[in-house]
Image: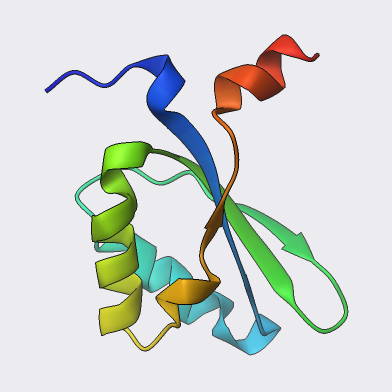
Length: 86
């Protein structure tokens, strides 16, 4: 199955800073290359990465299996919309 650029999302999850390494380890178990961007704040770290819409169930499943609350996973409009605004 070929994915379209229109199916590309920006996924994010906010976690306590102490859980960053554990989350990155969980993402590394996915069958896709994940290029995560970390945004540090005092009480939380937000991890963002692009992913295709069809990946969402697998991303949620892997995070849940590693003890993360997959309901905290958020995603925004296709990245293509963000790029066109620049």
